[in-house]
Image (cartoon, rainbow, N blue to C red; front, side):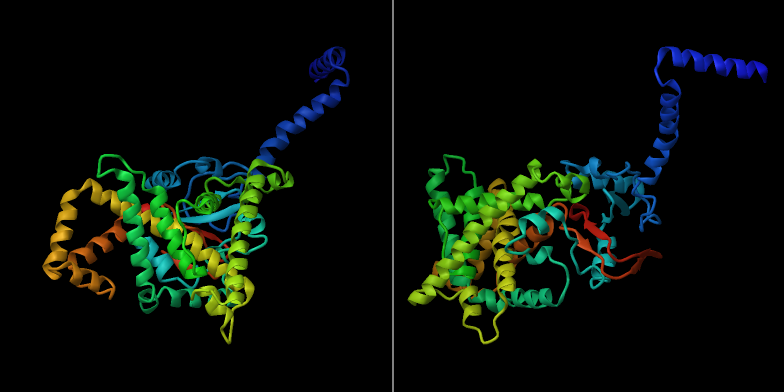
Length: 419
């Protein structure tokens, strides 16, 4: 013991000689060595996770698994994890727990059989607090409540088959306009054509006709503005690129690039949405309006609230650009790459409708009499998904999956590429 005491005394003397306040610094260093690992353990999102009974990749303190998917092709990352942890596994985006579904069977059990339990949507700081500050959210991003039930009912009625039949003339008009645009640009098939803007204009103009009773054209700068803004807003809803949603400390800095971008996009979207509102109300006053969703609600005996109308109109405009147009583009590119499919489709139409007049008259009746065309459309919808990973859902009540309890208030992510 005297030797140990002498040794420690000598160490203390040497430290004091070379480092002022040596004992204090040693205490701080020693405390750091002890407290740092303890802090990292306590800061781990998995420590108090409600999904610990599900397998999943380990995460980092504070950020969880977010860095593994940040700005990555998330569907591929999920497939890699599924190979290791199974078709259903848990991840943590920051401190937000999420259950990831990677198979059709699991999707059927969780999303279909427990549809009421996962009927809501999670709230995201960027989209719900910044982007939707003035006009509200879309239906697909709203939490489940009584108001949402009514707006869903209204939009479902507009998407029903009888309602779609009332817009067949508009669909025919916009389809002809698309073909005319492509023919004018391709120089009789000699010049490659980028179909992005013409097809986007098709979807946008059709939705604008339904919502506001007006069309959109490629020559109009507003068309380009809307397509550009809606595309960027869709990117802000992606869980893989939005660090403000999962790292709350960064929200203390309101001028981060992402926050500034979201605010700019909000202002640009608000400008054209409010402009369309003023335009259609001006037409109502002048008696020059066309029948549309806005005028239908305006003259209704039981109208929706302004927030509900805004939700429906914003939803339809954004959804027309986010889903339908991508599917149309993919199908057209498939037909361009597979001329034999075009020939089979044409021959199938001719077998049922020998003359042009019969074919076009039948198209305006929306009759599915050509089996090959019906199969082509259904296979396109089945094979191609415009979204590789669906918008997240949120559980609102507990349920079980394979004997494991799924608690409420947990995000559910569906990897559509596998299901």
